[in-house]
Image (cartoon, rainbow, N blue to C red; front, top):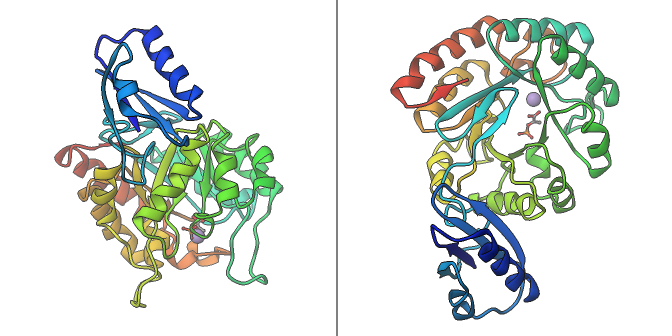
Length: 337
Ligand code: PEP
Ligand code: MN
């Protein structure tokens, strides 16, 4: 249920509504918009909307039949804008994250980050714990990898995003990382999502390999209902019958999700296509479709990459892409950063 407060509602009236719904066993989630404050009543059993409508300062009570509550535009009409190291995602901003698939060595991260930062990239990606299909494939450097990416990012004044695979990794990661990434394979790891609801740094939630938009948004709802409002959704391709690309990029998911939800939607064109030469056109398609950003794999020398070299861009190609996105930005009313 959503309780929309009057424009001139006082703080004590908001507190009173919160107390009322909490006494009935609901959690209260407050969204302060420019005009109205909206209170989401989540989790409880029965409440008569008329009792709420009679409380001072209440303008309207909406019963929500859709499964989305905190992620929905009804709860928060304005776009969520997430800012990390000066890079904004959402609300007309197009944020760009780049870096290798995996943290391999200090030198590899240093060479890649040096080039990326010289192009103006401010958020560096790189996996320390890798969800590999084969247990015999390189699994990542673990904490040593986290130390490397942090040191390199600090050297070039960049922020760090890396994938968290298990709740046992969260505490350590918080010492090294600015954005936590939930990989496609963990999108419905509800225990992990609940724990991520308790941290206060942004979470990139990747769409599951075969997840519907509804399942994806419900996973975001898990994180938000735990108290963490900073969720960036990431479309990274879904599994279809088509084999010519690694996955099938669901570009239509961008406007579909943006209509339902206020959360930023970015795209990972690297895992979506699996092929370097498809990454650039799909990145441009992302901004054209109204996406809020990109997370792209770039390696200083993709030929020697331990993981996903074939889908990693050469730094110079990434630069051309970044420049092109900046040219497209004003036409598409997006601030590329
Ligand atoms: C990644 O971004 O490193 C990754 C493994 O992606 P996904 O979870 O989308 O497969
Ligand atoms: Mn990868």
